Amino acid sequence: EALENIGDPSDLQLAVSWLLDHGEEDKGGAVEFKHCPHLDLGQRLLRPEDLVFDNACIHGCKGSENWVCLMCGESRCGRYMNKHSIEHWCLTKKSEEAATTIAESSAGHECFGHFVTLSLSDLSVWCYECEAYVDH
Image 1 (cartoon, rainbow, N blue to C red):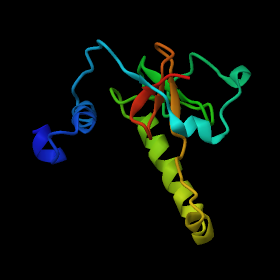
Image 2 (cartoon, rainbow, N blue to C red):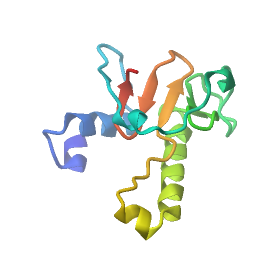
Image 3 (cartoon, helix red, strand yellow):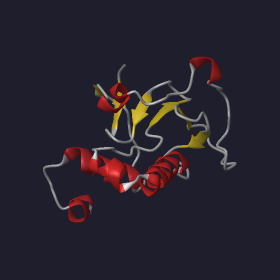
Image 4 (spheres, one colour):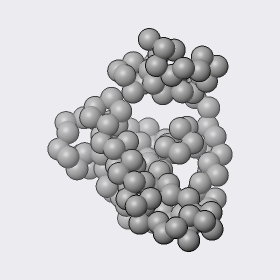
């Protein structure tokens, strides 16, 4: 079913993302950590002293796998619950795109939204733009 929906059987990352987004469980194993070029662009991240642990999803979800946005500090549930963390990234990216002027776009300005998040269960960092765990 995944191959039918993604169209490109050679794109392993797309296939894995599709499976995870459609209820498959990540069984763990070797996880590749990637250098994230978006973090090198000078994006303003949350200061370490402002990071708050043990917060529930701001939407009230009862899950144990929450992620904190490293740009605004809000906690949201991950892809195995109600996907509020992914939704936050999508909404912030669309909001940035809507506010971007034609001149900014012409000058090469890119919109990423709140693209980087920290797992409160294992302290791994995920970049939605890279679709990967990041190592910095």
